[in-house]
Image (tube, rainbow, N blue to C red; front, side):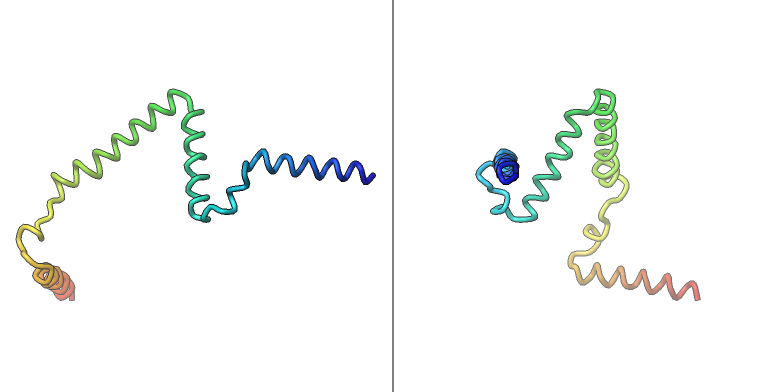
Length: 106
C-alpha cells in the first residue's frame, strides 16, 4: 500500500514538473500570468477556427476600423479645438451650453 502511494506521489510530482518546467509560474506577476493565459486562450481559439469564422472576424475588424477611425474623423470633428484656444475657454463654452439647455426646459 505504501509503495502505491509513493508511486502516485512521484507520478504527480513528475506531471507538475512536465506541466511547469523550471517552476517559473510562481515567479511571474499575477497580471502577467492572466495576460499570458488570455493571449493563449484567444490564440488557440483563432488558430483552431474554421476559415469561415476567420473571414467573419476579418469583416468585423474592418467594420470596427471604419466606424471608429474613419467616421469619427469626417462626421465628428473636434470643433472645440478649432474655435477655442485654451481648455478654460472650452470649459466655459461647454458649461454655457449645458446651463442654457437646462434653463430652456424649465
